[in-house]
Amino acid sequence: MPEEAVNTRYRRRKSVRVAIVSDTHGFVDARVLDVAATCDVVVHAGDIGSAKVLQALGSMTNQVLAVRGNNDTRTKWPARDRTVLTALPEALRVALPGGYLAVVHGHRAGSGVARHQRLRWLYGDARAIAYGHSHRLLCDCDGAPWILNPGAAGRSRTFGGPSCLILSAATTQWKVEPMRFQLRQA
Image 1 (cartoon, helix red, strand yellow):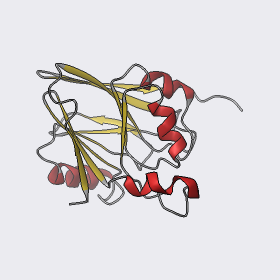
Image 2 (cartoon, helix red, strand yellow):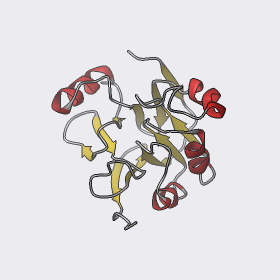
Image 3 (cartoon, helix red, strand yellow):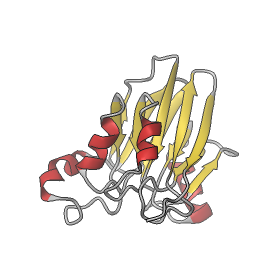
Image 4 (cartoon, helix red, strand yellow):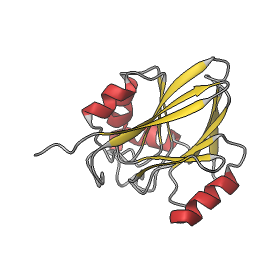
């Protein structure tokens, strides 16, 4: 199991709105920032690109929690941001009303169906697992735990436009809302 951080700040609330983003690669679409501003917490599933991304997401919400992706390396981040980079865990467990949200980048879990099976095996006690890496928006809520990929929230390989997810977590019910925005012409 990868190095994992645990956050229990939201466990005792009746409900929490979580913006789930990934694969910003140094840039966050303004519309994703607008969505993040309506949430209690933002979770970033890796390939962040720089501390500026986390600051932009954090300036609009109470807290930003993030994990490292395969492109979150010393050679790809600005030198001034390396302290932030080294503090990022590979995996994160967020206690929410009604269960845990596990967050990983997903690049070490295989591909396609095998990835989902492996993530479910690794984090079987979670209610949902958020991962990035593929840049493809998806919500697999047919099995347990749910497998959620917010797609790419920046401008790199968005496969139809920047996207994110809103997870509404309450003690008795969780709901996921995908958000996709049209590509903007240059």
